[in-house]
Amino acid sequence: MLIPAMYQPRRASDVVETVRANPLSLLVSNGGRTPYATHAPVVVERLAEGDDGAPSLVGASLIGHINRTNDHWPVLEEGGEVLVVFQGPHGYVSPAAYDKRPAAPTWNFITVHLRGRVEPIPTGEQTFEVVTSTVQELEKVAGTGWDMTDSLDYFRRIQPGVRAFRVHVESVEAMFKLSQEHTPAVRRSIRDHLTANGGGLSRELAEAMWAEEFVAEDGGRAPRPAGLGEPAGSS
Image (cartoon, rainbow, N blue to C red; front, side, top):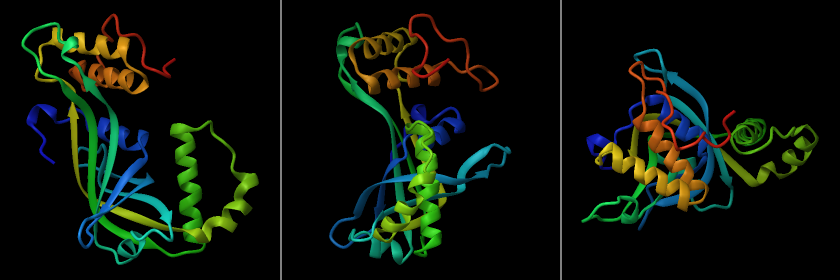
């Protein structure tokens, strides 16, 4: 992935958060005529520790599962290298948001590419643990904390229909394309336009633009600029 320097994320923690908050990944492996590509929920099993002592995705492990009849599974079962893509908020940026001429439209987005080696997980109890661990993580980011206790027997009955895997992450690429090439005034105009004219993803994108721009010197968040409002779900 080509990542211009200006689109490099400024905080490693934002890359980790993107992976955790957007678990529906695109899992890619080499194939015959074309690569195999499967959309599948993949969650962080364990983070590693970076050289600075902070949580790191390099050296981390991910877990996921797919339908056992998927043609992709035999390739995963053989091990080898995989690419796991996580897509963060994204949206079209109309030149109407720039309030200047000439201007060209673009698409802002956040994406994370993790590469590593895949480890097939034996069927039975180990696969069952991957399924339940995945449900727990998905409930944290997209659910309501649903208690799966009463459904565990059902999980066991349907579990033979899936195959589980682990990915040992070896490299991380992240691109946060958030109009960094523009002046603060234009970026503010784009954020306002996304907030006023878009849906949920557009608002998330506006919030990501704010978070990327307003970083305190210590790496934390600077005071929130007036006019954007509080992030969705904050309290």
